[in-house]
View 1 (cartoon, rainbow, N blue to C red):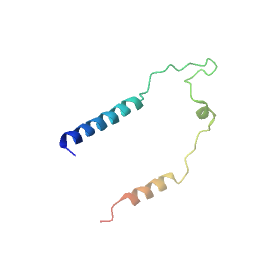
View 2: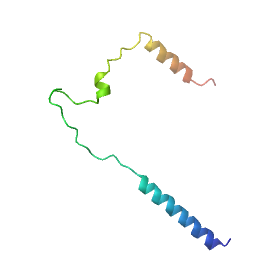
View 3: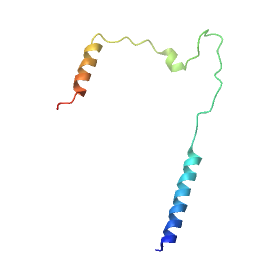
View 4: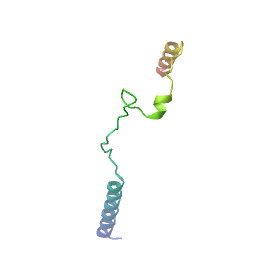
Length: 75
């Protein structure tokens, strides 16, 4: 295959990949969140509103200390 043909095919392939990437690109668009007058505070998604507050375990500090020891290098 000639070098010019290979360059042309590479260019076509690169442009097609770039055009597919541009077509698939989705940026977050600004949206207006509607406020429900019944709540009286910042609106939250329903699954977060229904959940209860998580209380930390008493051994959390010991667990984090053990994790930090496991990350240390042995050398």
